[in-house]
Image (tube, rainbow, N blue to C red; front, side, top):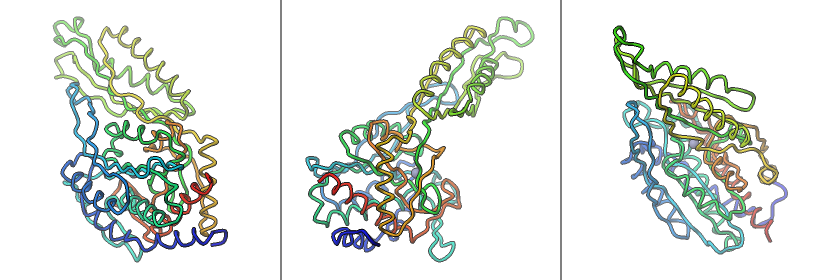
Length: 402
Ligand SMILES: [Zn+2]
């Protein structure tokens, strides 16, 4: 534990006294799946109670309206829960952003609802790692920093959204607003590996719903009058597949629509996910998609409506981001924790924050694994370990600005 000042030492030690495990157990008992509005409201209230231990102005913000295309090709509104938003000392010289998400992936009807001990120190349960454990780590670090003599030089915003697992469309504007003018951001997704390795560069991600309107006709009597929407969607799916290259993954994931066997189908909906590694590749893909859709519309004589888009921008490892990773690594070294990072294929709110020009380390949460499965686990020792890492990182960012 060399290389720490007495102030740093004292702050780091205080993080371990926070009731992180108790919070994880209590919060994981509440089902807060992204579409479970009642559960999210309960979760938001529990978090509001816990974060009331910090100074500043805390509000539960209403989600922004989000639309999606249903299986009949109709545009429908999707409802989301409220987001927690805390603002502390907005005029302090060092401004940071801390983000997490309260939503999880299994609904209330699913069998996976309760926590249980897999072995001593390893807890299994919905959201224990992703990311109720991470939220407890964030709160413990901030509470400890608040009691340090450096606290009055730090201002920050905390955003805990309700829709990260479904793409953060209802919180994207709040995240972007809160990122403005920040020196750095920390996001509390679990570490990329159970050994604590952080996620560095991330690709972007785009979800598209492409609605093809053809013309129905009798399959035997006058098929030539029909315009087969299913065929056009299938043609598009194959063309999407050919967009794949180094730096761009493409996954046509579903075709809906169709008709009885004796009718030429007049409706099909194709859903596709694309993940570009860089903003340039994203821009190229946009152009190619537009050209492909125009070509298929012309060749099949159908009408095509596109909804959705690239909701998560790519997050390359910039020089500013690398400097922040190095600062976290140094803090880890002073705590006796080896910290490394590697690229990840996943996306998260770190993508949105990086796109605002703010350096972000987005895997400051716990060590654990098997997230988004019934085997999700939290290594309980990582709660105080990662809270110490966060607290020291925050203090170093304040000291660096002096
Ligand atoms: Zn997560």
